[in-house]
Amino acid sequence: MNRDARAPLVLIPGLLCNEVLWEPQRAGLHDCADIWIPDISRHASLPEAVDQILADAPFQRFALAGLSMGGYMAALAALRAPGRIERLALLNTRAHAEETEAGRRRRAAQIELAREDFPALIEQLLPALLRPQALRDPALTHAVRGMSLSLGADVFIRQQEANMKRPSIAGMLDSIACPTWVIGGDQDAIAPQESQHSLAQAIASARLHVLRDCGHLSTLEHPGAVTQLLRQWLRHPSHHPLHQGATS
Image 1 (cartoon, rainbow, N blue to C red):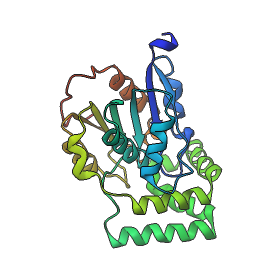
Image 2: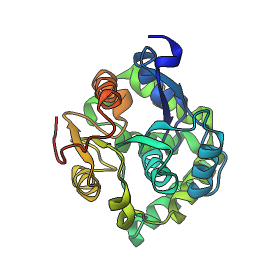
Image 3: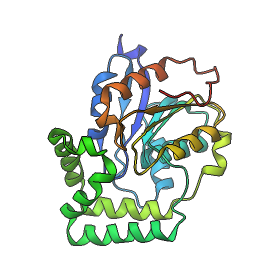
Image 4: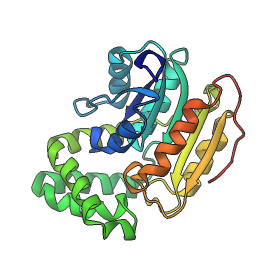
């Protein structure tokens, strides 16, 4: 497939993630997608980061996917610029703001630990990012550690503070009209299955895929399965509503 025939695709990383998060998909979809991965490390506000992505994107109209915090940002982009988003994929994502006091305290404690001992914070985060079996994969844990360390404590603090201030978009999701796939993991400790189901139910055009034996970083834990799903998503007719609630 020549470059001009490839689908324009923007992939948004999550908290403390960069292009490494999407490397398997960038390699696996290069024949069918012209991929751009934005740098989301510089912004103190998620809405501001979304506006910057929309301003910098090298395509006028494109498919958009995001994982975790990046999925929240992708959904917000679809709400802010519906005419530019041809299709949407939300991976391991929650649409709600941080609403519980316990959640706010946990994030604040993580920020404090990041200031004091950033490598220790990464070790604390790993069991939430990867399912137990994946934690025993040295290549995978090395990749996640390396990605996190390359971004550093300042980026984590900035992004986590932005997360703590992010508005809930759950009540606006029903206005998303483009074909949407929600992809989650059955062992995701951060965006559990009930979050994935709620997200899919809130978007009329959504189709849900729950990957078995998969934690939060699905693109790295199950790169082949996620790449195949995104390939199918890119090929799905953009004008045809998707059946809600399908799982795989």
